[in-house]
Amino acid sequence: METPRQILKSYYGYDNFRPMQEEIINNVLQRKDSLVLMPTGGGKSICFQIPALMLEGTAIVVSPLISLMKDQVDALYANGIPAATVNSGNYGSSNRAILEKCQRGEVKLLYISPERLITELSWMRQCLNVSLFAIDEAHCISQWGHDFRPEYVQLGTMLHEYFPEVPVIALTATADKITKADIVERLRLRNPQIFVASFDRPNLSLDVRRGYSASEKFRTIMGVIGRHPHESGIIYCLARKTTEQLAKKLREKGVSTGVYHAGLSMEERNRVQEEFVKERIDVMVATVAFGMGIDKSNIRFVIHYNLPKNIESYYQEIGRAGRDGLPAETFLFYNIQDIITLRDFAEESGQKEISQDKLRRMQEYAEAQVCRRRILLNYFSEMTGHDCGNCDVCTTPPRHFDGTVLVQKALSAIIRAKEKIGFTLTIDILRGSFSHEITDNGFQMLKTFGVGKDVSFHDWRDYLLQMLQMGFLEIAYNEDRHLKVTELGKEVLYGRKQVKLAIINREDFRVKSRKERHK
Ligand code: ADP
Ligand code: ZN
Image (cartoon, rainbow, N blue to C red; front, side, top):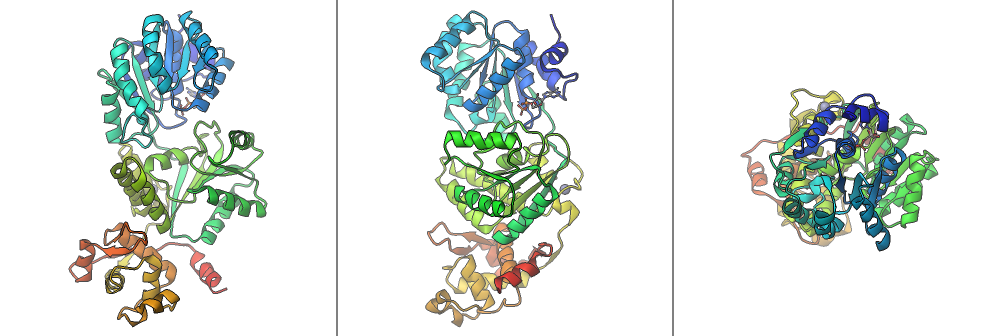
C-alpha cells in the first residue's frame, strides 16, 4: 500500500507536505476525530482526500457550497481520483445513479450538501461503507460563527447516532475561541485532536484608513492600482450600487474592471469570475458574494471600500490576496456611515447580540492603536509577542494629544441640542455653519455654536468617531440616528475624566480635500 507521501506525489504532484497536513492525515487514518483550523489556501482538502484514498469505502464530504463542490470534484477527477457530487443541482435520477456507484465502491469521495446528507443518512447506514466524514466550513455549525446554518446542527447529532464508529474530520478557516469549542461540542467529536495551523500571513500588509471621503478613497485606490498595473485585485463594497458606481469610475480611468454581486444572473457571475481568473479583467469590484472558492494565487491587493461586518469575514477576504507568498496590499476604509448601516443589519439579523458583538470587535480593530496583526492573530487564538512591522500602526505609530476640551465641547453641543442631532448637525453647530436645519431649530442661539470652528469638518468627524469608539457617545436606535451622551461621556463633560485623542493621519489628503470642498 502506498504511503501518504507517495500519494501526495503520485496524485497531486507535490513533494512535501505543508505544516500539519501529515499529522492530520495520520490522525484520520487511525480513525480518530480531528478539528482542523487552517487559513484559506492552507491546504485543508488534502487532509481528508488522502485518507479517503487510503481507507476502504467512500468518504462523505459535507460542504454548504454547491458551486465549490463541483469545482472540487472536477479537479479531483482530472487528477484521476474517483469523486462525485450529489446535490439539488443534479437531476434526481442522476443523484440516484451516483449513490448506486458509491454502493458498488466506485466512488472514493462523495461531496454532498448538509440538507441532502440528512435525508440520505439512513440509506447510507444500511447500504454504504463509509470511510470517514469530512465536514467542511465547520464553523457553520456554530451560532458564534459568522455563517450559521441550522442543518449543520441537525447533522451533528445525527452523524453521532448513525455512524458512531466512523471518524469525523471538521475543517474551517475561520473560528474564534468560542466557535472552536462549539464545533467540538455540537459535532460531538470524540476526544478530538485539534490542529491549528498558523493564520499568520506576513506578506499581507494591513492598512486602515478612517473617515475618508469618496474622493479620498478613490485616490487611494488609484494609487494602489498604479503600484500594480495590470495585476489582479479585489475591491469589496457593502452595497451592490456602490460596486456599479465604483466600477464605472474605474473604467473611466482606463482600469480593466469587472462587477460581481448577487443581483447579477448566474451566467453573468460565472462569466466575470472566469474573466478575472483568466486575467482578462484586472480589478473585480464586488460584494462579499465574490471570492468563495476562487483559486487564484497572484491577487496583489484586496481593498475593503466599507467596513466588513466581522473580523472573520475580513480575514477571509484579505486572505485571498498574496497566496503565492509574495507581497500583497490590503486596505480597509472605515466610516461612520458603515457602522450605522452595519448596526442596522445586525439589528435585523437573527442573532442580534452576536452580530453586534462581532461588529464591535471589527470596529475595535479598525480603531486600534496597536499592531493590527497582533490583534488579528490574538483573535484567532494565536498569540504573538512582537509587532509585525507591516501594518499602518507599526509603520506610522499614532500620536495622541489631550483632547479633553474638544470632547467636552462636542458633548456639550449635543446635550444643549437635547440629544436630537446626528453627526453632521453636531459638526455644523460646533463649526458655526449656517444651514436650514440650524436656523429652523434655532441652534445658532446655542452657547456652543461655533466653539469648534478651528477644527475642520473632517477632523471633527474623526474625533466624533473616536468618541463613539471610546464610549462617550452612542447612536440612538431611532430613525434619525441621534447621538446620545453616555454615562462615561458625562464623566468627561463634568471634568472627572481626561481624554486622549489620536492625531489623524491622512497623509497629504487633507489639503487636497479641503480645496475640493471649496470648489
Ligand atoms: P483550503 O481548502 O485550505 O483553502 P486547498 O486544499 O484548496 O486549501 O489548497 C490550496 C492550494 O494549495 C491548492 O492549490 C492545493 O493543491 C495546494 N496544496 C495543498 N497542499 C499542498 C502541498 N503539500 N504542497 C503544495 N501545494 C499544496
Ligand atoms: Zn503591525
